[in-house]
Image 1: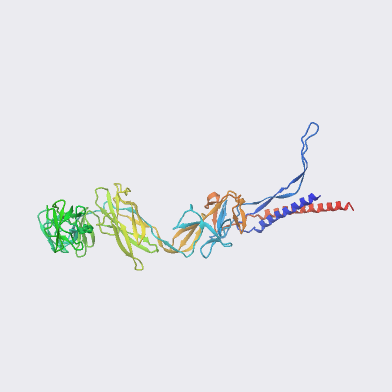
Image 2 (image 1 turned 30 degrees about the horizontal axis):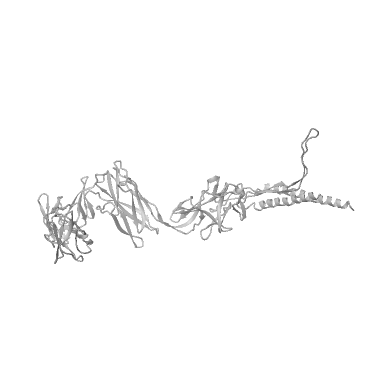
Length: 612
């Protein structure tokens, strides 16, 4: 009789626990993302009164005789089935379906939840507002989200500025393969030319514009302001020199005394020679008749560089020094050719092109063998969001080694060469000057009009805007025999302010800026467990990893059958009808077990009264 009391007691206690589970399910029937539970029972130990026996020839087999000692709770199972979506219209609400959970952080602990009632706090943190837990995900870097990296708190602050500086400009479309090049330059008789003579840059005026090749007829004496030049047909002309000659020039001789800077002791020996460039020929001075004062300005003495001589004399006007050369001077004629000219209003230039046409220019610098510059404008944004329009010039160049050669430069000056760094200044909206630099790029095209991508030419260049490097990509430029249509497209954008965010079904949070730019700011991360029912409840709709849940796998929406619905919440999966049925069944079970205790008590009382 005592056993029945304890048996009934176990039934009452465990049915009470079962009722607690049912009550919790009903209590959370409107809890967002709630997962209901169920209770399963199992019998407890049984007391064996007689073992089972095997049959023999005289009797059959018998079953064991056992009396059960009550029941216990076998498990309380977490039912991780989806709840129905409930549309809220709030963009930051997220409804998650499938085998996944949101990841949130509280302190140093990581938690998981199906409650997607998120919002942004005052600091721009994406949080569970009821508990302040930070939603985890991947943050974008300049609009690019790398989901292979680690996850972190999602922070997107409304009102933040968008600084989208340009780092890439792409040129596309065509350069005309039939662009004519300059074959002749006709200048006025007083046109200014530049020539390097004796290491000095002299300006030559009054050059005949008849297309002849001219050479110096005589030496140019010290202090001279004029010189005589001679053409191949024997005709001569007098040109003006500015500034006055400071040394003698022997029939085109070019003496470069810049190398004298290496003289630290003021002497020349075979061990410490001096290299001279005379008439385009290099000579080595191996001795000198006396030391020189390197603080003075020295120049070639008149009649001091005679053809065939092994010596050359320099002077500072009062003192002479004679060098001994290791080889005799040889005659070399320096030619003056009108292959480049700078035009102005007062000195116009007539250009003749390969197609026979001519044009008069009153500005710009021009070279034979090159085309007129094709100007293009590219728009770039600096690191402060300021917009700038920068011109780049395409210059066709005659070349026998390729089917098409073009130089790209910051300047329309056609005398530039490949790799030469050209600099200029631009003024921003506030009147501040910004420096620009660009190494001249050389584009080579094959016979089919496609850009050559081998190392002989350039396919990209680097434009530097006040320290900001911008890659200029020419890979999509062609050279076909049709009109020039080349133009540029750059990334970056004007300064804007983040005014709102939108979240899509991939969990990507897109920022919408006042300047119309839309770009990804972050992406919500999810976690997948091999046994979600094994998670440990920690309250406030949060779960933590347990020994039977498995290790979490960080995933994106759409993976492992997960579905993310923005503007909605997942309702509780507790079914009221089922719970009421379970409540009735549990109630009947508890009543029956309570009756066992009552009857058992009466039986004990009856046994006690038998003694009376």
